[in-house]
Image (tube, rainbow, N blue to C red):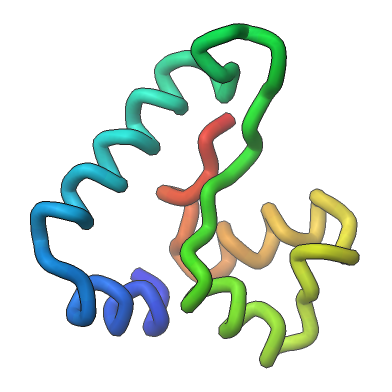
Length: 83
């Protein structure tokens, strides 16, 4: 688990974390597609993890998708990938 993910979990009530993770599971089951099937979602990354990525040189707003996926996998944060 990401260090920032652990901090995020500790700061949020457990019920919201469960809802968030179940939502990610549902999105993954849908192949990343939204309910309307007009958009595909690749990931849903909490701000705390985005901040950690930025501090390690990966800007999710500018980095290539392959770099973002690689970072998430290398830091055991694959759970945030929805596709």
